[in-house]
Image 1 (tube, rainbow, N blue to C red):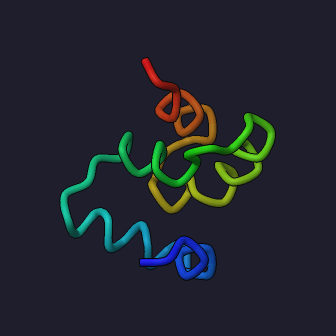
Image 2: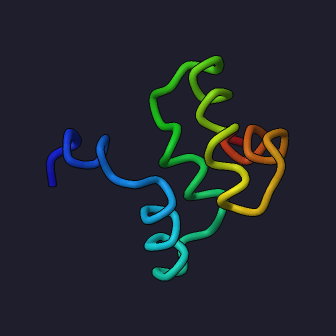
Length: 66
């Protein structure tokens, strides 16, 4: 699947699909922000965190590669 197609996918639908396929919240956060610099990931987290039922701070903690 082309990366360009994924850029235009509805975020809520993508998260719902990932959860339906038993992908963890940590994996979702990492995949959604892969290759993003911190400031871009923070902007994205403000949209994605509520859809994952977590705080923005928790989203940013989960995306770290620890």
